[in-house]
Length: 304
Image 1 (tube, rainbow, N blue to C red):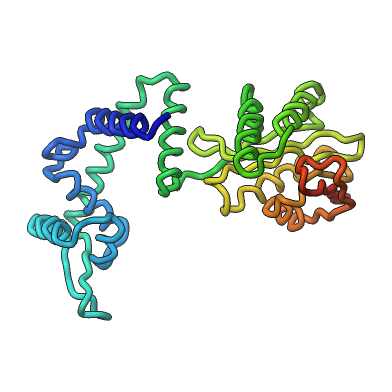
Image 2: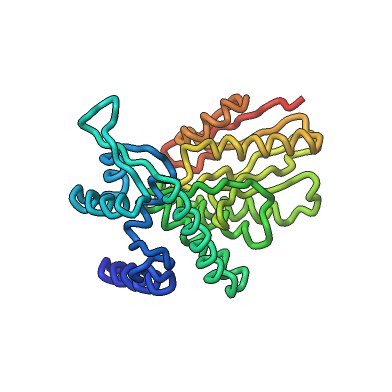
């Protein structure tokens, strides 16, 4: 898709969103405040007092425009401004009790507006909308504050495991045959009937899948860790560690005495997670490497 089509899609969304959320009304949520004024009240209420220069930087507002907005809020008795006692060159803005009341009123009205938007939607559409908005926030550098839950994969979600492994590894490494190897692993997993001895987990936030890992039987006493993956946007928050811990806890509870895994020497982040969990390298080989220019590594951990 050309950049012009991307631009048109984003602008279309902006128009639709401002209409359904009434962002263009003179009085945002019937509060008597404009949208920028309401946002300032919200931000000052979250952390009060705070430096005006920090507030302006956070919201990317023009200095003169910020001053005019704060002047109007101060005249309404919603905020106060005073010199910073530790640095008289800086000005601190604080919320008043009247400002806190307005912030609570706005929060209730905003929740009601969003609920009115979501409630008529079928559950699948509602989940897709929330997951898409979570993706938008991540892509634009404003990740969600919602917690990430690790749970067993549901019907159809192993298709996501295959798709994202194929896409991410192609983008980051370009290994030939990798998608076929993942498809074979998942086919073997789905072909086994004993669910008490194997499991696949996904990491989910607001309906959006962010990672996965599997545990399958190698033999009666040995489990195999399979297909650890964390979305690029979710890396750096110990999600890979949590997924591996979930796999190890399951393997121990299922009665396995040992767990093994196969990885590549190029996967430095994953290798660090395995080493931290107690895995050690048994041997390396080029013959079964998925990377034409690297080595396959075979790791193990004694669970007993």
